[in-house]
Length: 298
Image 1 (tube, rainbow, N blue to C red):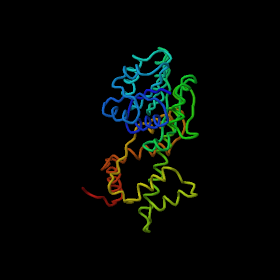
Image 2 (image 1 turned 45 degrees about the vertical axis):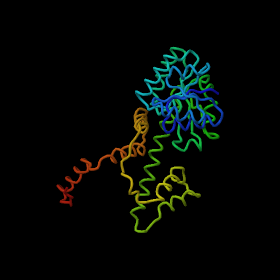
Image 3 (image 1 turned 135 degrees about the vertical axis):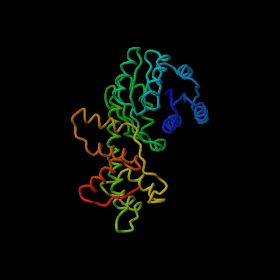
Image 4 (image 1 turned 135 degrees about the horizontal axis):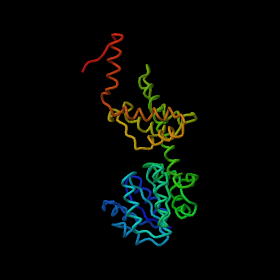
């Protein structure tokens, strides 16, 4: 099928590569032209403006966007709507808040343009392994994009999850669960790192991948990260969050659903960004005040 593709970052460029290698005709655009030129050497058709991209696609057009959530996605959809026609479809593969996706669907519907929200998981490994894809939107609009979805996903790795917003909703919860899993692994390996035995943490992670109930792709990645240097001395323990964990926690609050593990894993990421927590200083001061407990001075 013909596909327009906007956003050639780490995931977007590899998604284009996977589509091209499977025979799809992809017209690609990126805000920085160098990335567009690079992907054109691998079989994609280059476009250097949104107008040019739309012009090069036959109707009904299907255009994927893989740009950061928030203002960037909003601006991209606004620009696209100035060029697309009734019957065309926008597929947003970024990590957008599902409330925004529901709103964008309604906005696109006003001018007859379809909107599909697609949660995409797979990271930098997706080119080789495929991307888990969770789509939300009306049946007819999803069907237009489905040949591309099925190429991007591994076998059984694609699902039309429901109506507008459902794809990004499921991806939001997926990432919230990911936060909890990662935090549990991090805590367990930290305990073993402090053990009274000279444990080979990479070997343990490898062994757990065979028959253990805690085996997972994340554990496999942990083994890869630990193998060169299990002290991880080249890294600083500063952990970012890209929004989905916060949205999951807020959704749990809004739905009166207890989610302590995901909530605490998000809070742990916040704590990682404080080299010297003021809250920890308060705790130390209080322990010293009421019990004379030892404190450390700067």
